[in-house]
Image 1 (cartoon, rainbow, N blue to C red):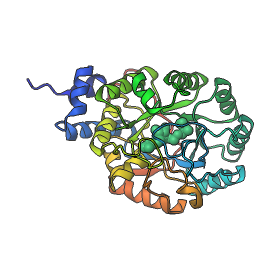
Image 2: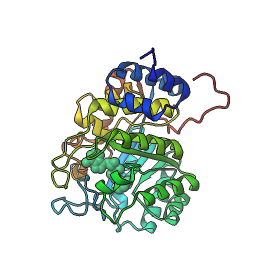
Image 3: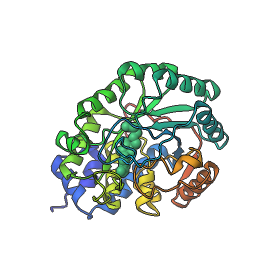
Image 4: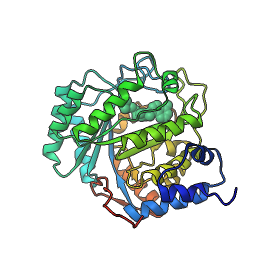
Length: 353
Ligand code: SAH
C-alpha cells in the first residue's frame, strides 16, 4: 500500500480520514503498532500512573427501557435495591481509608432520588471528603438539575452517548428516548463546568464500522475529558439476549485509537472488558487506558447491579478488589496511584507529543 501507515498518520496528525479509520477498524494488521503508539502517547502525558475511581452503584431502579441493559424497567425479574444516604457515605469512608480520592456515584434513572436527595448526598460527601472528586453518573436530567448537583459539589459527570448514529440509536432505545436529548445533556454538563465523560459500547447489536466512525466524530466535536468504552455483553432478560458480545480485539483497537485522537483523555479499562477476557483490563491498560474503577458497593448488592451477565468482581470486599487491581496494574507494567487524577490539559506549543 505504498508504505501508507495509518498509525503513524493518526499519531502525528491526531486525526484520520473516514476511509483510513475504517481500514484501521476492520483489520488486525496494525494492532500491535497501534497499541505501542497509544502506550507511548499515554506514557508521555500520564507516565505509568493509573488512576483509581471508587464506583458506588447506589440504585438499580430505572425508568428507562434500553434494549441492551439488564436493569431496564421491563426486566421484571431484576431484584431492585437502593442504598440509603448513610450506606453511600459508609462506602465513601471505606473507600477513603483505602486511598480512593474519586467517588463515582452511578445508578439507573431512579425518580426516588430527587434533586434534593442527590444534592444532600453530594454536599455531605463534599464536606466530609473535601480533597476528593465527586463523579455522578445518573443518566439524563434537566440542565437545572445538573447545575444543582454541580453547585452542591459534584465535579465530574459520566454519560455515555451510547451511539452517535441516529438510526442505530433508534435500534437500541425505545421511542421515549432520543439521541438529541442525550447530546443536549452532554453539552449542558460541559457548559456548567463539569469534567465530562462520554463513550459507547463496542459491538452493540446493529453497530457498523460507520457507526463507530460517527462515535469518534461526535467525541471530537464534544471534546470530553473522559471516554469510557467497553464491549457490549448480552443479558438474558433483555430483547437483545441472543446477540453475542463485542470483541476484545475491536475494543482494544478502539482504546488505542481514542488515545491517539485524544492524547489527554482519561480512559478507563472497564469492568466489561475484564468480563469478556480474564486479562481484559490489563490489555486495556496496555492499549492506552489509564483509569480503573473498582467497585465500592456493599457486597450484598453487587450482583444486583447486573447491566450484563457474568459481571466480574461481584464477590469481593472493597479492600480485596483494591488489592487485586493494584497487583494486576503492576503486573501489566503500570502503577496504581491514589491521586485525585484530574484530566491533564494540553500546554500551548507542546511539541513533546
Ligand atoms: N443510568 C446511567 C448509568 C447507565 S449504566 C446512564 O444512563 O448513564 C452505565 C453504562 O453501562 C451504560 O452507559 C452502558 O454503556 C453500559 N451498559 C449497559 N448495558 C450494557 C451491556 N449489556 N453490555 C455492556 N455495557 C452495558
